Amino acid sequence: MRGEQEDEAVDMREAGRDVGRQGRTETAEVTVSIMGKPARVPADATIMRAIEHSGQQIIRGAGCREGFCGACGTIYRLPNDYRIHTGLACTTLVQDGMALSQIPSVPVEKAIYDLETLTPDVDTIKKVYPVTFRCVACGTCTKACPQGLQVMDYIQAAMRGDIAELMELSYDCVGCGLCALRCPAEIIQHKVAILGKRLYGRYLRKESEELDARLQQVQDRAYDDEYAELMSLGREALSERYYARDME
Amino acid sequence: MKLSYFPGCTLKNHARNFEDSTLYAMERLGVEAVELDRWNCCGTVYSLSADDLMRRVAPIRNLIRAKEAGNRQLMTGCSMCYNTIKRANIHVRHSAPDLALMNAFMYEEPVDYAGDVDVVHVLEVVRDQIGFQALREKVVKPLAGLKVACYYGCLLVRPKEAAFDDAENPTVLEDLVEALGGEPVAFSHKTECCAAYQTVDKPHIVADKTYQIIGAAQSQGADTVLVSCPLCAFNLDQRQALTRQTYGDFRTLPVVYFTQLMAIALGGPESVLRLDLHHTPAAPLLSAKGLL
Image (tube, rainbow over all chains, first blue to last red):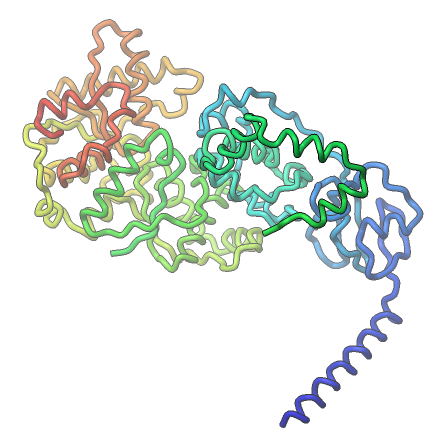
């Protein structure tokens, strides 16, 4: 019995290698249209790598290259598909026939407000981003979000003054702004999200006794000597200390 | 009895007095009102353009949510939400092509809508599924001596196809008040419009309407005007300040939600009434009648 299972496992590995070999030879390259210009690029490239492979240097529209900063928002279409797709260029793989365009910046009018004068409720949303209330629940923003967030749901939470839900649902927003570009009601979702997170942080977050105690220690200069010692260390010693630190 | 419950945006902030009293009354009457998961704004106003499907996506999406929750009834207390969702439901039930188009547009939803959820108003649930007799038996603090002018406004019983009572001379609120032990008064202005969104940029029109509507209630000796809509409540209550500035002989009158009277009669604590949200104070009247 045991022997049979092992044999099967070996077969699976063999099969996998075959598929792998075949895959590499047949789809080693794909053709994509990069901002209107066709290019042959590696089949397993990210959009960002494909752009660079085609000989172009990305000056705007690249940041962390790891899916965190939201600088490389991209829209694309695929053959025989009426839908417009979105993705971050650094984490989205190319596909054959993909026609893409980077959106390195999304023009919006960012509201200027003094957090100290606001209240964490619907009246603040009305005052700071009145455009929010144009939402018709079409869900286009949610379809557009490369992070897979329920964007429409957090805009709806904003419309009923549920700041905690607005914060929670928009927490992983990277601010690429593709939702705002696609919105037929011209709402600037990602900026409403930032307002929500600021209101939550300022007025609704849970108090942390441990943090307060530690801040008090810092203010009482309990760590001044250790801090001075760290500041006097060279790069190598600092690096050593960093990687040897005690972590949970 | 378990129902999907759609609160609506305003009940979550400026009309907490409506929401808290609704939930208390429903619980006392044995209705488990389960707030819809991921609900969105109802759409606020039903678009009168026949092909304005985009503005019907919002109400229909809520009906999909009810379906997802496994409930075939969606209950709401706000007249505007009720009207908007109910009429969108009627529209798609009568137009298969439009429904197909809307389902295709909402391709990200895991289920299609098939016209298979009923939209019901809290009053409808009380009248038809609980019954006024059963309600009467649960009253612990009858509204004795409280004279009430029942105000329906535009959206609760109009148009006819969306109405759950006579569109011209509805009586469901009067029957409710009677079951709660109060005295409904004959009210000539019960289906008048409160001037609705004119309140945004032409508040003087609202002041005129409030003067007429509240005045008509007072002429019948009413102690209060009963409403089922947060916009009617805003116009008839908050706009009493402007009405008073405009008309020297205007006398203020408390405006209450029907669910607040239900909560009182069913023995609810004062906390569920949220009387702090009223412009013209209702507490002195209720205290004087021994209801607080």
